[in-house]
Amino acid sequence: MKVGLIRHFRVKRGYPNKIITSEELMKWVDEYDASDVWENEINCQIKWQKCYSSDLPRAKTTAQKACNGEIIYLKELREITFSPLFHSKVKLPLFLNIFFIRIAWMFNHKSQPKSKREVIKQINDTLDKILHDDEDVLIVGHGGMMMFMRKELMKRGFTGPRFNRPENGQVYVFEKE
Image (cartoon, rainbow, N blue to C red; front, side, top):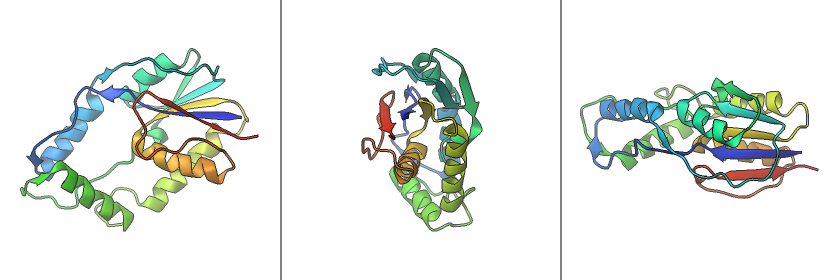
């Protein structure tokens, strides 16, 4: 059995390169979610029996290029949602905003919509739904979700490549005998 994980194509919106307020950060997230993508070639010769994708536009576009058959869109494959730790007019560099959000999330701070435990449960429930037929499947998703999904696949006996931050539009194949 093979599972392919692919991160959506690179988003045209890009990242803000200035200091921003929490309100500007959330506006950017909305723009990023609605943005078009830069398509690239997908190098994978495997004929996937099923394809599952996040239902966000950037993942849908990637899935349509990567898969020839039916694509099943799942909200559960969306990127991990986050919320600013502070709602203020204070401007911080993007990396600091994200750092504070990740720390808050790791420590289950009430500012975050879902805890780490909830996200891992969601990933496992989604994998249970996707992997029940022992078919070769392609999963099109997002970077953060892929990093946790990789860990859960490894716990289930799959072998595959390591990645810290998955490349856009690249398939990572995991196998289980």
